[in-house]
Length: 228
Ligand code: IPE
Ligand code: IPE
Ligand code: MG
Image (cartoon, rainbow, N blue to C red; front, side, top):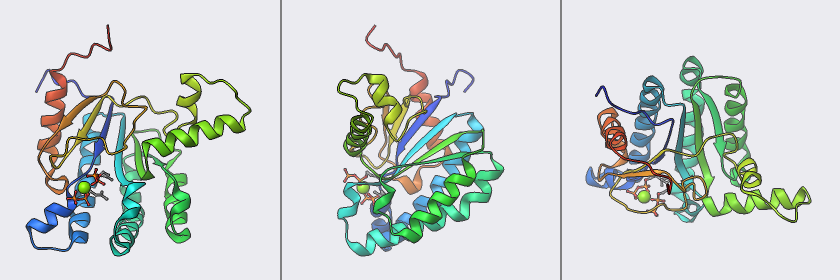
């Protein structure tokens, strides 16, 4: 794949963990566990390919409406997973950013996550943004409220860019969604205005490096016009 154009910023909606588990007659939590392992692998693969920014959707504002047992299992898995994965991220010089309303997390989880974010914030390699308790609409409201607090009565696009959770990240070039759903589900609404989308039926826990390369290959063939 000599003519492959690696996107500078890839964003992913990691969907299909529940269906993956169901197919195997396993509890949904087993699907989330498999999904976490896959995330670690894809994150490494992106780093090796030279992706500069990777943004993943791990838990949406709407996901709070799931059964409390599933929400708790996810909180536990995500915070423990990120803590466990910290040395590997450190070794790879990954800079971590958490995007979302972390105030909704139980303090023990929030503190663990913020600790890892702080320690990895000095790194200078790939920027990994994990969207947790994240919603695109909620993020826009958050940004506007910050601007109101600054005393603004009129705003620009640049004002919104600098007050979103994702401030500092360029817009995503490629947004991948797994599991055969053709929707955005409230992900990066502002930032994806000109992103290329790639949808695949593959369930997230089956999305390996080969599937990632297929997505990048598809992206490489596209002509981006930006309205010109
Ligand atoms: C994605 O998998 C993970 C989260 C949304 C947290 P799902 O849990 O949505 O799996 P499906 O879509 O039910 O298969
Ligand atoms: C989107 O998946 C959110 C994440 C992957 C974290 P969902 O499974 O929550 O989305 P819907 O409900 O199918 O739109
Ligand atoms: Mg889903």
